[in-house]
Length: 612
Ligand code: M6R
Image (cartoon, rainbow, N blue to C red; front, side, top):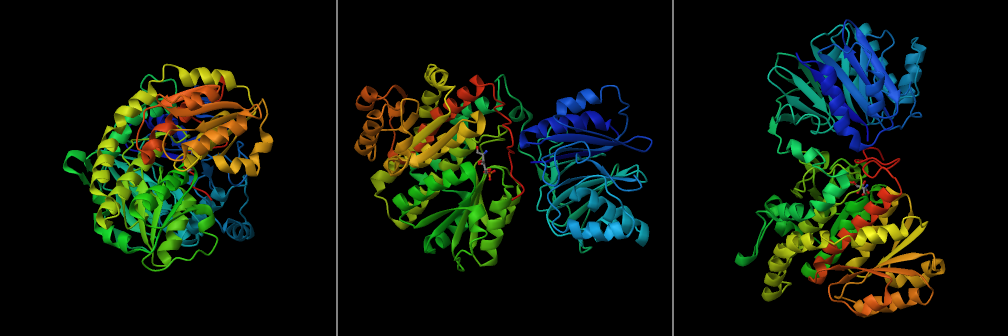
């Protein structure tokens, strides 16, 4: 959702900005723009994609060493030319880009109108830049001071970068609730919503904290203050990301690359945390909180979307292995429903991006009630990772495709490690079973390789169903979250309506949908309540539904009933989600490609949902 890139230094800014916007495209957006300081401020923007902006700029003078650039995902006002960022202040001496929402913008706007300001756009951003200009002119203060004073009047979330026609060496950046990373070069600075536009220039970064204002002057040191005017010392970190992780590496889409990376990413999630031959499992990030978790009455998992599905698998794992009661909550519901949270309760937030606004708000709410907050995040240094008391990174590497794939299997891997460790400490698992599970987990990346190498089976099935209008996904036990995840993958990238259900719930409603046009995907692996799932398959078959089944290698019963089968290797029941989800990701991917959909950037979706 919305992307920010900015540069101040001695290089040409435009190539850095436009490449940065391309790197941020995965976040989702509907308009794009650039402002450069080049004998005055020049602003260029369009509704549409970065490629269109690039074409529009082909014949323009793009000289300049300072610039800001933005991709906007519309909130206040439709995605058109006037609402696109950057926005000028009234005198055109300031230009701003902004992510987030200024909640009291209407009130501020009213005041500014009374003071003679007029507005071109419907955005809250134009209000903010005029407020800053008004303060600068009336208080006769420097730009960074005007920004600081203005931000004290603002309610809401922001990540902003401002350029001034009167400051040819400096840009100002600030954040609250929306991420902003500053890359520190030799004598220059890069700013972006995440590290992806920065990594090819420098690995030294500072993640701005909430309510910090940064003054970035080329050739000088980074200066930081908070909005209460306290000086802050920048904490410089090293990026672990590599440039190759941000490229498609020969694949047609990032999603396909990321699906195929899962053997490696699951291995990376376990690296240094699991040693089956020594019967060791530990997660360094939460080691100090193990006794707190064991002492808690329950764990509340908060997350959204795919991460919520991983949370459901987590519920089954924690209850099954460690006998700890778990509730899994949509973060967006949790934050507004006055939940009962007591001091010492453990809340576990799961998020790939670490920036999801609802999950962040759920954390803040639980924290205010005295809960201990743990996190499972993929993006290092993200807001959620920093808002939690402790946690474990998934180490899946950057996930660029909007549809989450390798992040899900990595989240489930970390949840499995956590559940095993807690079960070991609590003594709720026989030693022999514990060791067997560790070995099986360690071997999982090999089994994932075998799942990925399906000899074209999912692609063929996709070709048979690419034109249908509906899909049903059914599973039981550990395979119920897999059914939900399979349905989510299909609907978000192919725009086919899909529902995930617990298989036995089918006869309480969805069975009415079944006829010869309804494909039903069963996750019908041989462990758990297999026989019951077979009965559900028969119920669908009796009504002429088309059956696609994910089965365990060597299965004959379901094979006889199903129209199409996809085999996965046998594994322990609780590890099946990590294998069974993968063919469903591939099925969704191939159907979407065959329907001509934009797989990596599906319509209306954003990679990190930073507004509620
Ligand atoms: O970054 P997060 O894991 O917090 O994101 C949560 C959801 O927005 C995300 O999983 C979304 O549902 C994906 N598009 C699913 O593929």
